Image 1 (tube, rainbow, N blue to C red):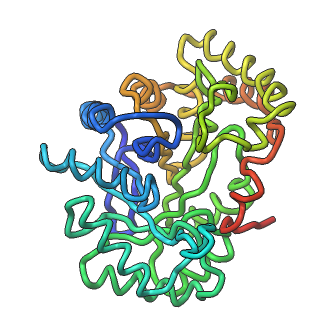
Image 2 (cartoon, rainbow, N blue to C red):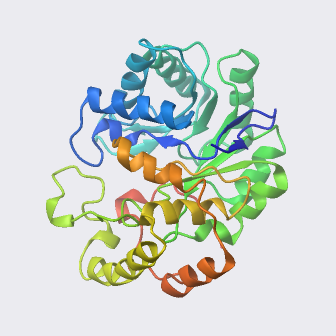
Length: 330
């Protein structure tokens, strides 16, 4: 397993990590034992970077990781997040970056994880009412207290990253990035590189589309995250599958899985990228890890570009109610 730098103090992690949202049932029913098996497989495969959040199952994902860590020596670097909340009156999703709220959520996350320090702490979504400079001061205070090892932001713009970095070291930025979501190429990947910030792509497999068995929207249960998402709704989904089938055939000619090819492509976008595919399957994780050793060539990259040109995906990546909190740019 290759290593890549996660924090500006030189701390490295495996070249790919494991996204742990699926442990909370966001993509279908699962169990603690299944999640524990996936964590054990990650350890055996050399994957030592876990990504979770306080709102993944409202603490379920963190609690599952915490219960696993009680059974074994902790060899993982763990990132978690806070900043998304719910209006107590309406239940609507809101954002809170105040110092008091973040401190309370951090303490809750540490308790669920069974840790005294989390290796990386992200602001999950920006609260427009709190200047990012003030948010940085809060995070720097947590770091000085030894409660967090590094500072990150999720789904912010390059301009916000520059403002934050002017206050102190930002270690990582997390955004959706894959062969079907390429907006970060319009400034974020470049800004991270220039500032020495790790870029952490989530959903590098296009929320399951860039695999041998893409999801079937007809099987989505109530509450499933992809339900109602434009890219998974007709007629967009059928259009998207015509492109995906060609990508699958390319992977077949290379004698690898589409997931392996998608991760290999992502890793070539820069040596500061650390993709975090989310899965609750040990076998699926092994396909992702194989992307670290696949030898990508210019010829293969050209073939991918011909099959999946920039902007090929039909439909938005989020439904209208999911967009708030994501900072736009370009």
